[in-house]
Image (cartoon, rainbow, N blue to C red; front, side, top):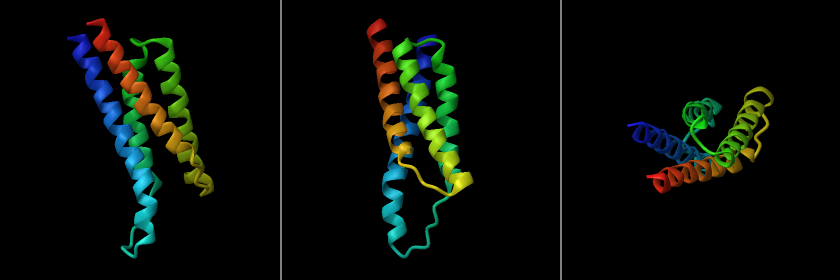
Length: 116
C-alpha cells in the first residue's frame, strides 16, 4: 500500500512539473497574440505549491540523489517565482527547475519499480 501511495505522489509531481513546464514554454507565445492574456505569477506559485507538497511526501522514502535533484529543482523554481512576484524580474531558472522536477520524479518512480 505504501508503494502505491508513494507512486501516486510521483505521478502528482510529474504531472504538476510537466504542466508547469508546458505553461512556462507556451505562455510567452500566447502573450504575443492579441488575446488579452496577462502573465500571472500566482499560477506559477500554485504549480510550485503542488510540487512542494509532493516533494515533502516523497523525500523521506527516496535516495539521496533523487532528494537532492528535487530540492535543487524546487529551489530554482521558488527563486524564479519569488523574484517575479517581488522584483517583477522573470528568470529562466523556472524552466531548469521544471525539467529537474520531472527528472527527479521519473527517477524516483523508476526506483520504486526496480524495488518491486
